[in-house]
Amino acid sequence: MSTKTYIPDHYAPLLNLYDTQKAISLLKRVFEDTLCGNLHLRRVSAPLFVEAASGLNDDLNGVERPVSFDIPAAGRDAQVVHSLAKWKRMALYNYHFPVGEGLVTDMNAIRRDELPDNLHSVYVDQWDWEKVIAPRDRNLTYLKETVNAIVSAMADTQKTLQSVFPQLSVLPQLSRSVSFVTSQELEDAYPNLTAKEREDAWVKEHPTTFLIGIGGALKSGKPHDGRAPDYDDWTLNGDILLWDDLLGRAIELSSMGIRVDSAALDRQLTAAGCDDRRQLTFHKLLLEDKLPLTIGGGIGQSRLSMFLLGKAHIGEVQVSTWDDETIETCHDAGIILL
Image (tube, rainbow, N blue to C red; front, side):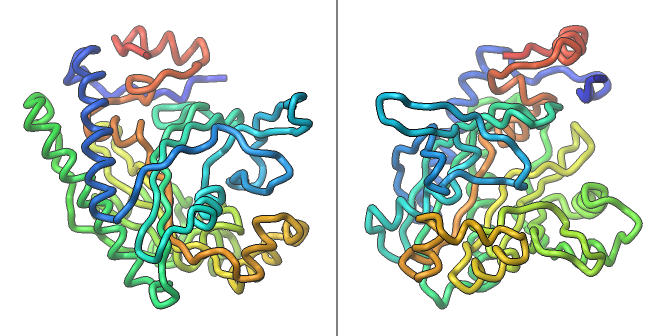
C-alpha cells in the first residue's frame, strides 16, 4: 500500500519538539476554558469503553468495526468507543443538567479501520460536548449561533498561542467570519466534483465554513457523507471546515449538530434501515421522549493542534501507530512522529 502522507515543499516545523509539547498543553487548557465559557459547559469524566449491548457506541458510518473485548468479572462484552455522541446525552439525563447548560469531556477512541494519512489516525482524541436545549432552540439560527461561539473560541486560542509563541504569528489568522452553506448548495454548485472536492473548492474561497445537512440523501440520491441516524438530526447538523494553507485543502475540525428528537429518530432509523435499534435502551428512551433535547459535537484536539501550530502531519501532535512507509516518508522529510 502506497503511503498517503503528503509533505509540503520546504516544510519545516515552527516549534521544536519540546515547545510543541508546551504549546499543545497551553492550547488544550485555553480552548477548553474558553469553550466552556462560551457555551456554558462543565467538565465531566467519560468512559473509554461501553457495554456492547447498551447501544451507546457511535456507529459512525455503520461499517467501522469497534474494538471489542469481554470482561469476565462483570459477565459483559465491551467496546472501545468510536465517539461519545450518545453517551453524552444519557449523561445529561442521568446527571439532571438544566436547559442551557452542558458538559465537555476528553474523548479518546480507537478506530481500527481508519486509513491513516496527514489528518487521520487510528487513535482519535477530541473534546466531546453536549448541551441541553429547549424545544424552541431546535432551529438553524440556534445552530449557527453555537457554531460562531465555537469558532470564536478557536480564534481566541490562536491569539493566546501567538502571544506566547511569536514564531506562530507567521500563520494565517483564523477567520471569525463563518460562511454557512448547505450540502445541497455545494452539490448544485459543483455537480461534477466529489463531496471532498466540493468542500475544497468552497472552503478555499471561504476559509471558515460550516457545511449544513450531512447524512440525508441529496438530489443525486447520495448523501454528502455518512452520518449515524441516531444522534444528529440530518437537517440540523454539519461540519466546521477550515482552509489549511500548508496542506492546501479543507480540514474538518468539528462534526456537530442539534440532536434527533423522537420524530427525527423515527424517520432516520427507517431511512437508514436501522429499525432493529428501536429496542435498545437509549433508543427506547428517545422514542418515548424521555431524554432531554440537546445539541452537541466533537472537536478534534489533534487537528486543532495541527492547524494552530502549523504542523503538516497529525503524528507531530499525537502518539499513534503508523505503517513503515509513513514512518520512512516522515523521517526522510525531517518530521518527528511522536
